[in-house]
Every structure is written in structure tokens, then in C-alpha cells.
Length: 306
Image 1 (cartoon, rainbow, N blue to C red):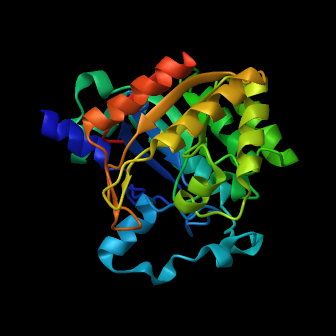
Image 2: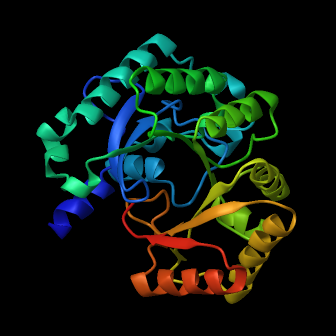
């Protein structure tokens, strides 16, 4: 049974039948079914993370040529692909209906889902890149909330999983407000405490301070979830100085009035963009979590397989 669960939560494929934008996954962090919304079919992202699983999957398959470099994708909005919002709405309605009715669990790998995980927790903007880069992000948020309400699934949370680079943009800010006003959550990525490590890990031209400012301002308006991925680079764990800097950033956010609902601390579960990126052991991840809890009094949960 344990192997079946591990296989389920490690399978975050964006493929679901013939659908283009909507895909269900079993997620430990969601404690059940998370229905993904992919607004980045071309892998448009302004991060180039060393641990990226989208690039890692393509690296494994030997098809990296279609993954753009940072210089090609930042800040070039012309790489975004127009989303067919009518198709997205139909796919979401169909997928959410399957999940709510339980029909989703009657076939394929979902049939192995244990009863405690056969619940729909959220509809999450995630996908193959950064969802807030899509010019249609706000429209897609409105569709998600409309379909959820239409089906009476008011306990299913709208969620955006994001690198927090565009919170300061008016259209994105409006969409985030709509998500939180409808019982949803913002899950913001923060992988480092210093600009040096951020540039090494996330490999973005967006300034590190922009990330910190955006997270702080968003957390002042509504409690947010922080997602942090720790791992080994070239077999070495993160230095003590970097851990302390990360803890200081968490303290800075809360001291400035930001509310951090939870820190989700996790490690590598699938193939990564760079082969020298490897997972922490359970013990190493737990040690980091204990340090963060002890220094900040924040709630910290660890996840090992997605």
C-alpha cells in the first residue's frame, strides 16, 4: 500500500485524456485530489530552477530543445500562448464532476487511491510554468470560482502556486484578492534567504527583493502558505549561514505584519533539470524543519513525495 501511495503522489503528469489545460493529481500537500490548471503549456516561466521537474522530465526523455533559456523567456510576454477559456471551463466542469462523484477513482492509476485521499481539496493554478505570467490569469480565476460554485463544491479551495514575481501587477493583485475572498489560498515559493542562493537556485533576473516585498505585502492582506524546496547540490546540504538567512527572511515577513499560515518544506521527488540536484534524507529535512520551527514559532510541515 505504501508503494502505491508513493507512486500516486509522485505522478504529477499534466496529461489527462485529451484535455489541454486541466488535470487531476493526488497530492500529499493537498491531502487528496488537486485539480491542476495549466496556463503554461509552453513552459513559460521567469524562473529557471535547478530542480525544475518539467525540465527534468524533458531531460530524461532527451527532448530539451523546446525548453527556452532565461534570456528567451524574460521578460518576453510574446511567448505566452492564448488560452481557450471556453475549453478550459468545459474541462474543469468535467474533471471536477468526475472527482466529486467518485467516478475518477474507478479506472487508471486513480483506482489505487486510498479512501482518505479520495477527496477534492483544491483547484490549483500550477502547470508547467508560472501561472501569473498568463495575460488570462484573472479570467481563468473567475472561471474556476464560477464552475466551483455552479457545482456546489464550496469546500474546494481555489489555489495559486506561484513564484510571487508578479504580485505587484494590478491584474494579478486583483486575481489574488478574488481567490482569497472565495476561501482560496496563495502558495508562494521561497527557496532562499539570500540573493546569492536565490540566483543560484531559481536562476531568475527578477530581483530577490521583489520576491520578498511581494510575499510580505500579500501576507499583510491575507495569510499565505510558503513553499520551500531544500535539497543537496553536488552532494552538499545548504550551509548554516544560508539556513539562518532564510529564517531571518521569515522573521522579516512576520515582523512587518505578514501572516504565514504554514511553511511547506519539501525535497526532490522527481527528475530535475540538473543532475547534480539530489534529495535530502528524511532526517535532514526534519532537522531543517525543527530549526525553522524553533527559531520562528511558525507551523512547518515536511513532505517527501509531492
